[in-house]
Image 1 (spheres, one colour):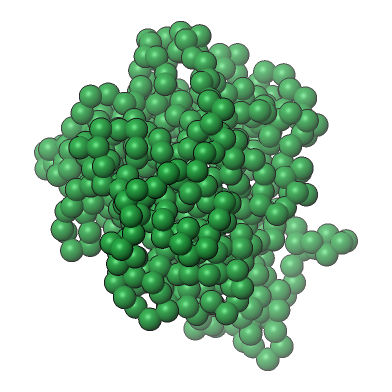
Image 2 (cartoon, rainbow, N blue to C red):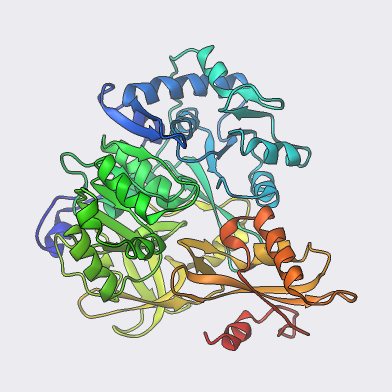
Length: 537
């Protein structure tokens, strides 16, 4: 835990890692706290609100751990969790960790193809879902040879075990499996530059590694009366390990609520109604909230800290944050493989518009060339993190080649370029790959292109990101049609729907261009940089 100070240098000097040899996330966030303290405040889609204490989380996770073991799961088997922000999501994670299984969070808006790839890739033995996700799982179950059991949290439905009935019949006593801090705990899939997404395998220590990166941009979180919320889904590292798990570690309540569609007016209402003091807000959410008129006159919120990540916050958005919330929105930077390593902390250092901040205490972050050699101050290079580092992933699941390519010597290369000034502030320059940043998500073009190619009208396809004032970027597809097909608005709509229903709403191409050919290298690879040039990037 960081020690508060008014100077960045003092915060760094006082910090040292304390990673024990043995550590279990599930035990830490459910069994270590006062069992009577509030852990999760759950608002459902019908506006019903329920409270769950740490004692509830402890007992329910013990029951589900017993259920998983009874269904034959053993150490390091994978458990897919296809649920929204809900108590059952937290219980499923905690149970998996306690039983030394590996949790695999899955985004509720994923379509069947996106789910199939991830579940096959990790060899999931169990899946926990709800009435919305169950039909997707049942539709692909024949393609999931490793899958043994599906649990549904919405009661007895054909093809699934009733989650709550199974818990009711299980013992609430469970002896957690002893896990080392370096033992595997979670796989979070992250889209790469080419091909299909890669599963970043993290150890139990990843939560401890995240703590400085949460405490720093939230102005020395936790403080008395803190209460956390994010509109980001708990299937992503930003919602799960930037908010839920560290809050529970510190004994701080979390609001569980994710609207089907983000509404900026409702966001202000939530901050006020539930007494939210701390929030992680993606830049797109902040830009939408900025459009709400006179929020200070209409909503009685008392928020203490807001963190944001995904793109650099400009001077205007920072000033809006000060005028609207009486605080400085602190930007932070990281990625699924190595998260929350750079950030701002207005409580101990000046926040400079256009800069991501300084290295979060405990992390050695630098700017290096492609061989891992530091570049001179002010020069552009690869944003990199020196290993070993407690927040760094173990490896890509079943992909040693990609793991090796992620490193240059001791440096993990983030895939982003930036520069470092003489005061230690990092400036983000841009990506050195083809990842698309849209609505707070990082999307690889490979998965989109593979989906496009399955449409009967598509002969060749390429996907790139193009600038968008609200979403940072949106997907644009360049498509070569098969013989016999003619371009039309109706065909564009059909192709867009095809991708949206199979992958996810944020991945479908909002712009489609039909072309006669795509720029290719001599080895037949799509030259996406040439396509980006065509749209002015």
